[in-house]
Image 1 (cartoon, rainbow, N blue to C red):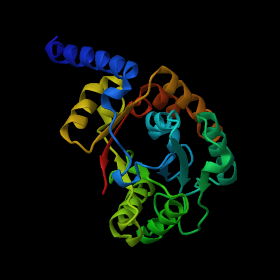
Image 2 (image 1 turned 90 degrees about the vertical axis):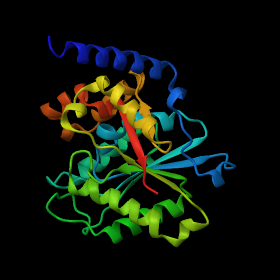
Image 3 (image 1 turned 180 degrees about the vertical axis):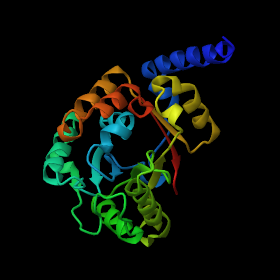
Image 4 (image 1 turned 90 degrees about the horizontal axis):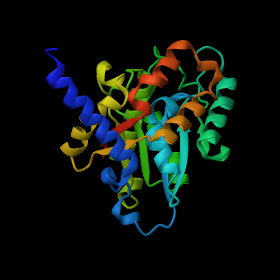
Length: 262
């Protein structure tokens, strides 16, 4: 009862905010394309992940939002094939099926198979190699905007963090992008309570958006959330009981907030 005066406004505010943003997502829309590239008819957005299923578990709101835009082509770069348990070949096929379930084409999925970038939380990835790998894809596809993890990697996985470090290293040091700039954004990591409070995190996420003009926020409506769950079921080898709970309660299935890397 003591917490009721605090919890009730948060619950009510989050519910109203979530419904409003599902109804009018443009309320939180911000330009993600570099100003110098606004003239392009077809923009190109790249998601950089570490393992197959990251795209569903962490980026569903953003991924669906980008796919819905007629002026944006979406690609996915996965830096490993997820071979930690020896199921790498299976997980490659699952990733392509998941991408198709989202509405992407198979050729928009790029899976890196490099022995120096193993799916292994105990083996550090070389940041320069990660940056070089990402840069090659960005340059070949004339990518305008990159979405990836932040310095905490959402779950703390070293491979997630290496993806962020690689994007940051590329964005800040590559001479290539001085004349052809890109925007790079890092997915905000939140504490465990916020991570599993679903749409109740709306109020707190809005505060992040309002704290910086360069922050971004994306929200899954019911259709987008269902799309993310359906795509995740394509990763059959990963659908253990705790991931099913994650799909039901994780705020990352409903809300993504970002800070700008560069």
